[in-house]
Length: 319
Image 1: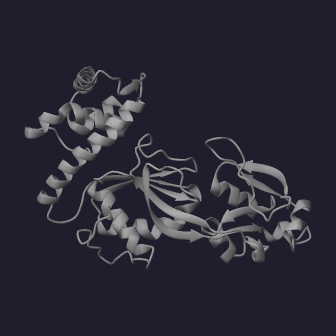
Image 2: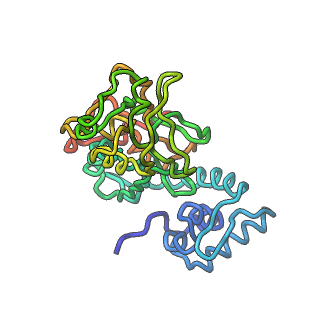
Image 3: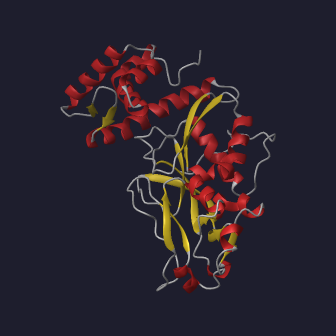
């Protein structure tokens, strides 16, 4: 049976049991899950949170039959208490752990970016075999607290000021299509030629709106034959001849190398997309998270072979 993640409640930790109950309920998205992590009953966790709310005179959690979500006041409390409790846990863990790490780390990854990030994930897995990777593959925007993720890989401009980021560089944004599509049309030579073409758009999972094609001013994009809310599916449709797409190189590189897709208008590429790993703007981060981010800092400069050990104790994320 898998060992639960998080601190068991004993000794001096009882002094902060109400806060621990609340923080774990938010982090795990439910009372029962928090109870399993803490080694308590769901009833005890619920009572602890109700007592805490009574002491503060404020509702911290919005509850339904299955899940709990932090209120605005609850989000403030979660940020403060998770920082404090995490610092205490970190001190205890680093003093008691001689080698390696354990526990779990949650990472949100866009669907098409998994192959690109796999070398880093493999290196981390080889270095810390006792850490369980919880990979959430989705093109939807991940709220780190709501979705219980420690880290998210994001493409493009960052918009959440409550998060911090490590840059992994950038990826070119390119227009491409399958040879079978290009064989039945006139290959576009300039952006103005795109108006006569057909192609696909990426549909944002959160809003349902299609992402605009980035082109020079006053140019019309291709006629949309389909919209897709998954990056891998978008690429697969293009490979099967649906038409043109505009996609980051990290999503289509293998298909271009193997000849399944061909880039067009390479002289008219728009600015590349930033690639970042984002994490919570907290004074303390779980040790597993710090180790992953420290490894990522080195990896983005020089990829790490999966069999090369990485000394996670030698550096921490700059504060």
